[in-house]
Length: 260
Image (tube, rainbow, N blue to C red; front, side, top):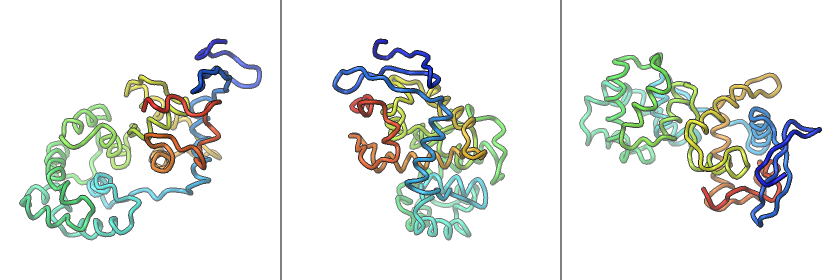
């Protein structure tokens, strides 16, 4: 077999020959997408435990929690909780009725809150246009529509939009930010160049089929677990020592470490 070729193997479903960083071809074995995601989840849970997922009294408040990224920071989460109880951002309508300067002051206790005041107003206007006064809407127009619509808002990147739609709207999308892409490429799950649709398909479909002990894997938890791996081990330069996913690397180490 030449580098990059795949074949049927007697012991596993598929085998692939990898080209290692020093140019040597080595044979490795491929699991199905759901199986590798199951294995990755088990390894990351063993290392980090189960992640606390953001909650909200309504989809609107959960949307803001995700937007401010305060899910795992308890002090920031508590500050935002207090603000949401009776402040101008308790609803999109109240947000739009509040002067920009006042909104900056209201958001001061939240990290990066004042810097996002303008974005919050823009998101509130978008929300009213889509859902009116409904705080927990049905999101009936589907993931594709809302992805395109939110991506048109300045300040919301593709991964942030998908995070909002996954965590708040519970739509079938997956946030593929740079750390997530690094992990997937370096472990041979995805290959560069990669289209967004293909990356989405790998995670969304794979997680939909994956389960551990008969229980489905929540894609929100998987996203949070990958974020922890990315922050601790998979930056611009891979730091594989001690990484919970190290055992899942191809023979010879991470693939294309300089390409992402």
